[in-house]
Image (cartoon, rainbow over all chains, first blue to last red):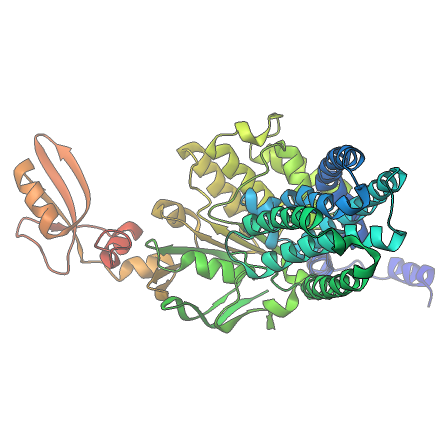
Length: 249
Length: 290
């Protein structure tokens, strides 16, 4: 019997005796069904765009500010390509306050108890920072290449920029995951140490920036990429499985 | 809906913060009472899944919350004891940020934020959070906990910093909200728990000392609460020797409310016990001194 037929048969039948009770039971069943249905939630990409609105603009702002400083520095120093390793950690330095924002403002516990959890928040910020870094490094490399005293090939230039940056970011992630206290400070100190080390090498060991030392840079790149990838795996695993990432409470 | 605590334990070597606690929580309001350092906050953090237990587990409808991940946090609302806010946000921006973290779609988030700002009386406040008073921050904290209409609401010291009128409003809000949800709140203000909690857990040294409905628990100390009228000089002496839960002056005399196993004096008359008396009966010394 179709819907129309059922309706007709019911209209012809005797008036219902337990109408209010039936209505109450139906309402109860509907309510229970609604309770079982999970409320709609946004996916990671919507979350990422939300994070861009709340944290990304600030993060990109500081990166652009740092880019201006770095470009001015690159264009003013002698032998600019070699000095890139000195300037690259500054981009990491600029995004660390954003990565540790929740610790600075005491929001860790509150954010950890949300759907996103710490891991997803850090991952979203890392993606935003990575995009900004990619843009800033490209501009910096272009500025260095434009300098008249250019003496290195493209691979060298990329390695001089990426190796210290990867080192700083890997240290920051490691600190975030393992250090209960002072992880923010340790990450900042690591960036300053990288800048100072690069400055020292730039002045005292210029042969490290020659083509013959390329193997050393590639080895350093592989090592830091390995550490960074490992930290990223921990982060992604925690984000995917909703595990606790870092020390919250 | 049921939240079960199964032999939940947390060590912070060498101290045991929570010691093998078991309980079953069905929808209702649960009050957690205990001195500082009793393990309330540690327990609440474990209930929220942000602190991993040393042993034991928290089960939501039979599933371990640590394995449920975001599915558990979807139905969780949490107000930590000490929480900060991003000072450059307005209350509205802050709620929208938390709504994004909770994965609420934008349209639903705007609607819910407006409702909650109205409830906590911050709807007309367009100021940055940095200018907020402690009470305003606390109200904002309560609002963010309710954003996702949570089935499990964990509130650690929710009434701290609220004035009496705001406290009453908050109590009514929670009582209205509770219905078919599990609400767990800890506070030092016994009257708050007395007003809204269906069941109370008294915590001491990481364990549940007592648990049950308020009238049931208060019944346990009936006959142990006394009223004694003495002179002012005698009052000081009594305060040093017995647990005095209240003291009030009347016609150059002092009426003491004493908690004692036995009649402290022949002039002492028994009186009706309250939850605060029960608390003082189990925590006679200064908080955390034990």
